[in-house]
Image 1 (tube, rainbow, N blue to C red):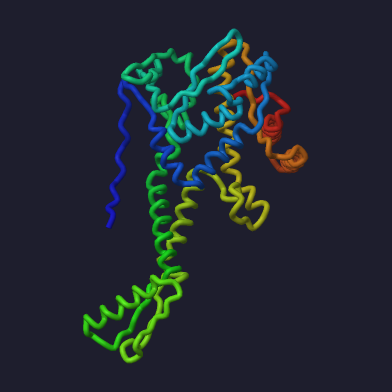
Image 2 (cartoon, rainbow, N blue to C red; image 1 turned 30 degrees about the vertical axis):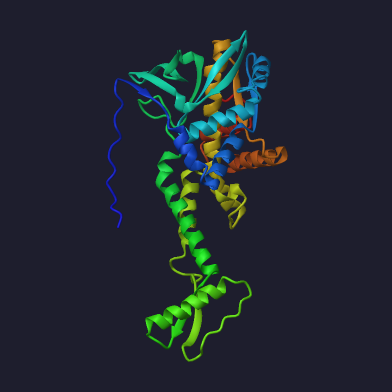
Length: 365
């Protein structure tokens, strides 16, 4: 029986310390769970699907983003998707800023090769492993850094996968168990009822049977006075120990932990359109927050380097939503707010929020 250990408090950060991610460890776990890889790709796809720059120097900023090539043959959307997925898996993703005049490109770095030098909760430098014991230090402004789920006095991010460690192990175990059980079910074991207790005679009969079944199309003869009945025993369908039920429970927990509805994977059911919208609400909130978070990091870490104090903004949006559908949804929301018995000031705030979501008026990040 497994003994559940009471959780202990996390270790408080010291005044001065170094921090590195465990990206490759959690990436390795993800690659064993296809549904988890699909969830992370789905989230990242939705976040970077569509964007536009707004404000001062918006055309120059868009040109700079369009010109980014990352590791050589990437484009901006692909680069941001990769950076986002790495940060979700390991907690932090990094890219070296390469500046040419008023143009900045971002070259991805191996997260596990980057060490954050932290003092009093502030990153004072980044140290990148160069191999053979050598390393190179970079100033904070020389590195593009996405800390996912950063919290408290720790300036580094937190992995989305690490809390799922036990669930992933359980999923891998139950999939292995299911494979063995279904193999056992499809290749049921024969059960012989013998009219003899003589071990030598029993061994002779079973050896003859084992030898015969290895030959395709071989005839098997069993003396009637010795064997009364032969039946096959396999895994009973609908058994209370059916691992498929446990596997579904684990997958449900993975989906909830990632705030990702199964309908977004092209599976699952909903009783009504309203139910489907409710199930998608958590995902929409997550995507919207990540879009604002990513946009704020691009503005402060890239645009501000070129146009300090007069930098443009980048706004990400859902490209998958049809324009007509989005218009109908916004008009329906306006009608509901106007018809509601609410305080006029509250109505005004709600309408402003709808206009910001529609991109009609400026939305400060």
